[in-house]
Image 1 (cartoon, rainbow, N blue to C red):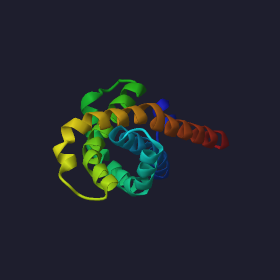
Image 2 (cartoon, rainbow, N blue to C red):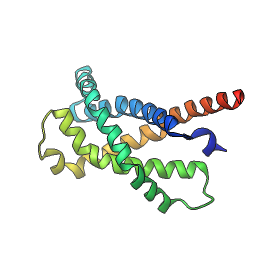
Image 3 (spheres, rainbow, N blue to C red):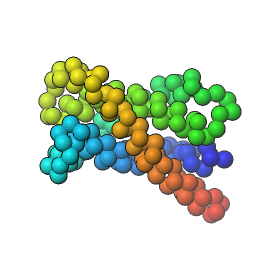
Length: 161
């Protein structure tokens, strides 16, 4: 029942789900990672928020690009009969794993306003932190909010039908 009520049923709902998750994620993850890099200050927060409009389209593109590989990885972790939460946890883990690899480099390029080798050179120092922050935000904030919105949308539609 949770699969049917809390996950997208069609492409429009998928777009809504992605919009909610990506807007919440980008507005929390980018500033947090920037503040970890530059120090927690209002100036750091402002710098990060100025980059958000440029990071967001990259996040959407990466979500679409990593959707099938993440689903494939998820299918290797969960088995038939695993519960909804196990499936969600594995799916979030796989999605964040793939996206954080790319965004550790691309996000740095966008935030710094230039392409350099620094994010590649420092990848293994920065990626674990970026992955952890992203996983926590996705698992405990962004996706639960989006699933709650879909649940309420589905309940509303089912009452009308």
